[in-house]
Length: 254
Image (cartoon, rainbow, N blue to C red; front, side):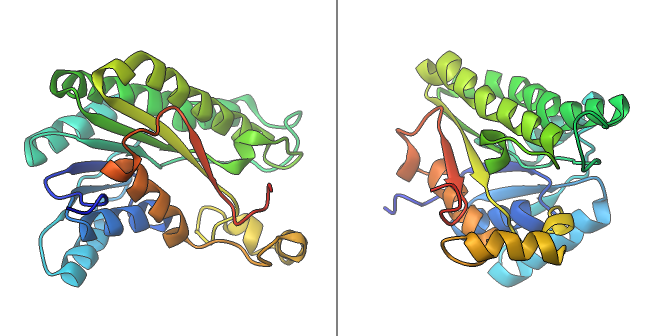
């Protein structure tokens, strides 16, 4: 059996109607998993689920809307996933927000709180909602999509980077606490990836050209190039990787 086989595995992926989350969902399903497509708008979730199911010729993707900003909706998301799929083997926290670009000295406090609540607190809540069943089964995987920004400073997206550094630390804590129950927690730190979320960076010609001109591969990344790391971490191929952060940036931080 392939180390990457995900048959009979159930995935809950936040922020999966587009971008990196959508790519992870598609490739997880293509390896046999059943996946929950979740974002704020049910129509977007349904469209993505339909696209995946049509392409794979099997009903493996299921839409459930949920806003990570509200604890009640996170609870509802987990409850609906358990009822629909029977369990959650793999939690992937991909949804995030970045409402402000500029100096941390200028960010409004409500924007600061929004970043921390959505990018850190929501992941903490989801982790606490899924770990009890994983402990009972003595099996589970938690993956948080962080950012290479979490490993470095920035004068443009400093608060976002701060939240992503917290995510990197969060998986270390989860690994230490829950490793004894065969629960693995890791993060993936992408560099600049061609997603709607990062449009403010890669559509800016100055930022794009500055980034690619000194980049070892002379280009930005694509969502599928991040998905591969997630599939590895979620499968038996990554069963002894725990508490780590995999940087997927094409060598930008080399």
